[in-house]
Length: 617
Image (cartoon, rainbow, N blue to C red; front, side):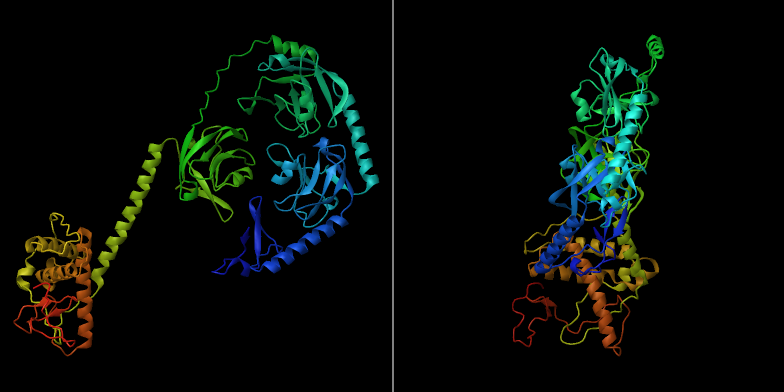
């Protein structure tokens, strides 16, 4: 389910238009409703249940189904009193296993043979379109499952008229008797892989699902039509009722006799596999000729070994990680891998023509054919790790996704993750360098002589000496870890580290070099940053190697910003060029008190506290 519009922050109960996903597309449905009020929810559910009962009471008590593609399902169906599924009545086949119900995947009328299939919303017949409240007898187009796809068949009909229903069934029975009588009396099977089932089969006077049935003359074989409309060959009689067997026609027979079908398949290695050497004929001489023909030596196809483990790397993190093959589980003839630390599955996704590998977020999605990722090309029996290009589904359409990979070993998976992390890191570095280059476009701040009672910090050295300084550090000094200690640090160690940080910062901003060197007082910046670092340590700030770098950058940026603001406030003050050292207002040495404020020794603040507890001089 999904809202038909972007919610823009609105909660679900304030959205009025909703849609459901079915068969690859979204369908709006005004009956979908959300509410935050329990009383309203209970009222609506009660109304829905009452409407379901009303529809069930208005539905016909009996309907008749005519289904030549699935003859085992045709016949009379009686409504089950008091039973409602998805708001609609349910009918059971009289004298059979068919169940006619409304499924929960789009609201289709569906015919199943087991109660478990009703829970799973599956079956062998279904309406071609959602019924939208219409009864099954009002539906014109029906379709049947042939094992690979749904196929519309105009011969499938449902009626609520007793006479019409019986006439249809009688006509169908007569047609079945006619076809059974016209079927060949004898058939011969050639199946090198099942030698015990080879030989002559004789028709017996009995119909199964509207078709003739043959029994092996000198063996355990039975040849019959299943409920799915395929010819099956079983090695025991009870398999006929269960629709089981070891040899089957590749496609539904659609009324054709066994000898008229060209392709057969055999169940082996837990999967159905087409075997070209299996042949059914209606002529003894033809069969004897097949037996006498020397068999061509066919080189066996290389056995494809499916890996026991796979690794998925994808932008969809929910399906990323390690997968292990599930034991004794096949899906559409191929193995299934489940996510080791999650619920995602790699499975064989059936397509209209060919099968591709799919990756679903859950077992339920895989069983319903809903995949988050799928292979861009048919796998042709190769393992998922051989699929080179994958596709992701975005807004109902599939497109190539270069971020998705299925890998055969953990080393390749880790290398893929490392390459992705490296690409992200390089992108972040480029963005950081781009931000540093933007500094060139900003106007240089001007140094303003401060006013008030706080004298400026006096700098050692001059601008001329700074002009000759090399602001591009060649080598970083040894790392200094100040830790949590507030004790003294050798001044030359501190200055060495701070100088490196200042020069590196200026080099990244392309300042302090060439013609711009005369506009920057490098030594003055180093002195300011040394004072700031000592102030931070005096306040108990833990300055490790990374913290010192941040403090230097903060001091430089705050100093420039403060000078801009002071220059804007006092435009009449003389503005010496940036980098020139302003003359100090006092000859005394500058100190910092316990609050981190610059003071003079002996200077008394308005609060009355004096500079008796200087922390740094």
